[in-house]
Image 1: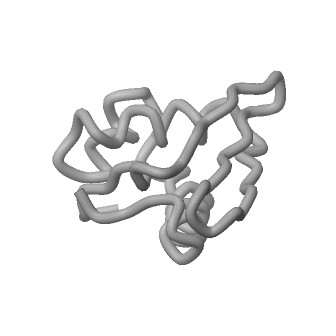
Image 2 (image 1 turned 30 degrees about the vertical axis):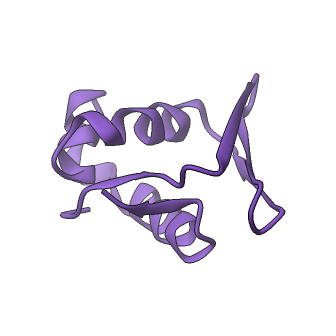
Length: 84
């Protein structure tokens, strides 16, 4: 949460009612963002110096960040997110 992240340049985002689908054209991986707040966080990442700052900017309480931290770590491990 204390790093700057952005979507990999080869990742496409398709918003859905449940959140979004992310598709990586390089690895051909598909990821599901199962919550609209997670999509909002991913979209806010490039405009903020850290994921924590992005979370605060979209109104996520600091006490509820653990699941978002795990989700971002999973997206980074699958190369959907890269360091900014």
